[in-house]
Length: 252
Length: 232
Image (cartoon, rainbow over all chains, first blue to last red; front, side):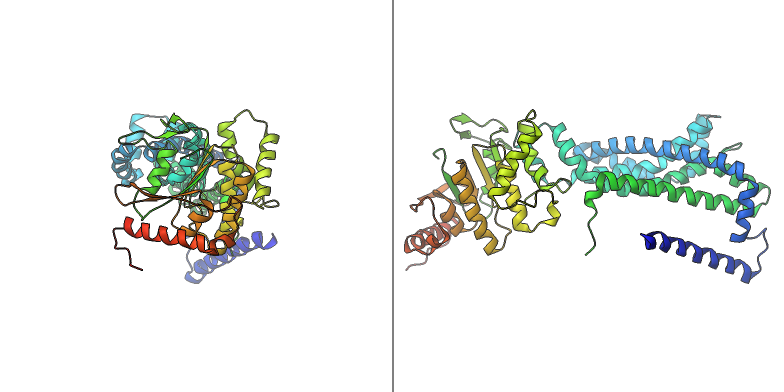
């Protein structure tokens, strides 16, 4: 238990040490590259803003991710169960996923002018639903026929088979995708926060740091984002333990 | 095929043995003709069949006990859980899995998983048990153990059984009848009545009578494969 916490903490300390060393050896000034020792003062100076903006970013990301889970699972079910839907939707989904989402920011901000919360949540959703849809779809379409047959031979309905077999069997893949999506959703949220004028959230704080040439602030925002990403990731792992802990086998 | 008997079906690979199981179970509808079972036409899945496959297909997220209970959740949704557990434990005891009911399938050996799978296929007291090479993936000793388990289960609770197999010794040991199917399309080529005592032991396979039967079946398989029978 101790080493489970100590190992990552030591790794982070070594990383920060190397970063500090890099800045020190090169003699970079603050307006070129911030070093870890600049960060605590930056956090302290803007502590109120960090809490306010961090909360903004976090709730929008979580809401966007939540919608991505619902819509992604629904799309995954459709492409998992229907051959025709799979053939029809896959090219569209892949094409949509290949579009850099930054190019969509002007489109949605023009469509929904001033709806900053809505736009941000929408972007977080758009960037993160794809892995969930694909993994649920693959999980369902690769279900071995025997698994279905043991219940189908007893006259079970499609719904019962889905709830008792297909859904739990897909959970490990679903959580694998959710870990990817959770970090992607942050990228979506920040994209809108940074690009939108008069935005809110950590992205906007980063932008204002850039405008004022406050490098320690900008790096402090990046660290705060990384921290939130780690928190959300472990929240997903926590849920995974509860709902799909059976898939986790002791390494031998 | 008379009710309560055990039919073993053998035949060359690809002759449609697995298709036969799916037809009997009502999972497929025939292209032509009809399937009749116990005086009733099979039109779709029925609650009174049990199925077992080569792969035990246990649900990894359920314990062994909950895997065995699964069919009861479909067939008898209102049965109290205590009764379900009692029924499942009865079967687990018969196959020697007491003490493993709270384990997950991944913690059990292949033979034990297949035993649990057999329990699951019998838990709702089906009148027909359909088995598609259930012992095919097991090693020879485990397989012989399971033959005896199968025999004991049948003596405790009679049911009609259809067993698809590649193993002629298995067909003779377990079957009351051995049906040889010929290649595509499958036809019943030969039926052998197994004239051995009900409570047979493995030793019976070494008697001359059993050897003769195995020999006859061997020749029939060769014919089914379209090869010349060797002259003796």
